[in-house]
Length: 219
Image 1 (cartoon, rainbow, N blue to C red):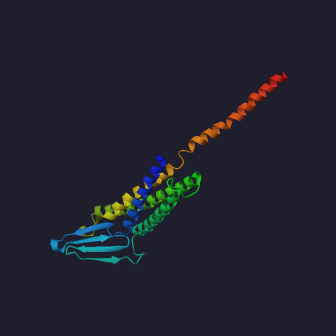
Image 2 (cartoon, rainbow, N blue to C red):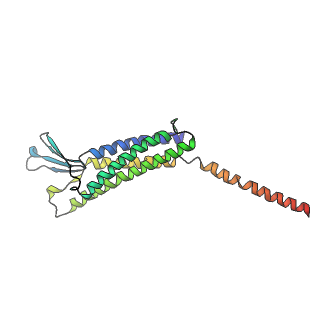
């Protein structure tokens, strides 16, 4: 029952992870630049995401522009798009697979089949967390390096936006969920395996004793 409860906790973490992953992928605020200017009325907040760039004015209006051209984008944005989409797909697969393999469900057949299914779902979560962690780290590195570059004007510098923080937290949830699923499947199988290996040695020892007894009879 403890293992089933731990798997259910990991499943809840994975749900938070996949929702955060999708949210971070779609949000336009991966990096933010606030330009107040000489008047607070004309303040502008520029946000850039993986799929669109948005500009928010202090008057309450905003406008967004989609990034249609893929080849004109920097390499780190192209890589972030690909890896975040893969992260969402793998986490969705992990949700479906672990639903079948969890001990608290009646799907997936016998215990061995459910353990292997649950382990496969945990691997999907771990890969999803890695695919989500790589683009957020790379994107953050690019923002910090441009911010510290003295040759870039202040108006062109950005800071990490909320989508990056959501991506980091979601990747952490998916990694923790994957590790829990992978480690909770085969803990109770170690005892029977050791017992069976020890049990296999007893017949050979008994045969040696019988052989020695028979030799004494002939002497």
